[in-house]
Amino acid sequence: MGFHTTPSHASKYLFRQLFEKDSSTYTYLLADVSHPQKPALLIDPVDKTVDRDVSLIHELGLKLVYAMNTHVHADHVTGTGLLKSKVPGVKSVISKASSAKADFLVDSGDKIFVGDLFLEVRPTPGHTAGCVTYVTGDDPNQLEPRMAFTGDALLIRGCGRTDFQGGSSAELYKSVHSQIFTLPEQTLVYPAHDYKGFVVSTVGEEKQYNPRLTKDEETFKGIMENLKLAYPKMIDVAVPANMVCGLQDPVPTTV
Amino acid sequence: MGFHTTPSHASKYLFRQLFEKDSSTYTYLLADVSHPQKPALLIDPVDKTVDRDVSLIHELGLKLVYAMNTHVHADHVTGTGLLKSKVPGVKSVISKASSAKADFLVDSGDKIFVGDLFLEVRPTPGHTAGCVTYVTGDDPNQLEPRMAFTGDALLIRGCGRTDFQGGSSAELYKSVHSQIFTLPEQTLVYPAHDYKGFVVSTVGEEKQYNPRLTKDEETFKGIMENLKLAYPKMIDVAVPANMVCGLQDPVPTTV
Ligand SMILES: [Fe+2]
Ligand SMILES: [Fe+2]
Image (cartoon, rainbow over all chains, first blue to last red; front, top):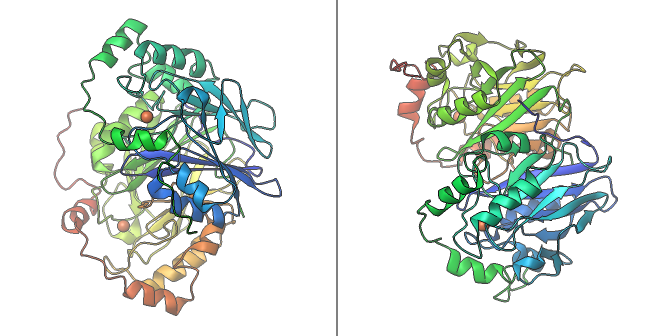
């Protein structure tokens, strides 16, 4: 056991992980810097950190094309709405199964390109009914090892709760086992949140050490039913906002 | 502009970044996983997160050899003392210039090996009199791009304060310019802290965008003298503890 956590194609693609401390959310920036326009995408941006993200993108000389969500978050307001107002031309992306509004609604097997770099869409419902995992491609000109942006389906040594938003522990168990644990073991796992200070894991590690998803399905369901978690603090604010990608209130377009 | 943030030698070396939220400290784990013993080192471990780190090291099958500090921290207690009590054989490492106690006191140009992987010691005083930056080697069998663990000398778009612990803004300016900004532009910058959710930067980025260290020396000194920062909260607890690598009180050896 022991995987290096850093992909190849060092000169062609750019990758940055960013953290929002109040909600412990990770935002991910990916770009093809070998392409003349340096097109980029953000996965799971947060409203509070949009200015930081826009400034970094500007400094790195990137052109933001997509602002994507893995799912309708209940713990923070997505940054996609603000990004659309601050960076002309940015398109929001979320799964069709989420029933949310966005410029592009993606479905199982869809590919999202920035330059030569692409992400595959894998449906991973269970935390919410519309959760997807975005996985970098397995072509020779893609990143190696592959990267899986798992949202709240699979967290490092954990997983998202299943008691709200069309959640289902049976669905989540099936999603992780069929859509994530079938990826190569060295695939890097980049979740939407971490609460213990982990930054990355691998499919191999989670298959061996995830305290929930290494259990059989019945045990897993028992664990998820007995978490006794509090009502999600932000859910009544965040979900309505996130159902329209953070655009429920018209955002003043002061750039 | 736009560097990929991820080194090569994906199968030979392991790298993990870890975060301690209360003090916003990054801890770094490096190992040679191609070596039969999988020897590893930790840079800037925190007392509060030692159990997490020990558990990860165990799961990854690594043998922790060194627990190192970039400097005598004033904002948290180092984990090196606890690590020595919990993992037999671990040696603590700090710079000779720090005047702190440790198993190994390192000096300019020293190399610290785990398996084939090594770190070079570069003195970078100014935040404290004994600050060092640990930089991965530039041999063909080392990581590419190189990684600089800058402690509080160079932070992402910032730097450590210079008003305590033998700090000097003139010294810090000289240190960063002569010891860090002379590294290749794609060198990855991994600081001891980040307060804005950045995870990594590069030498090229900081040379271009660091709001303090891109200024001339006189302007830099003016900035540092006018920060009006509060007295460091933890300094009276942390510094005495860290001067002896966290071992001032005998730690009960319950493993
Ligand atoms: Fe969620
Ligand atoms: Fe410090």
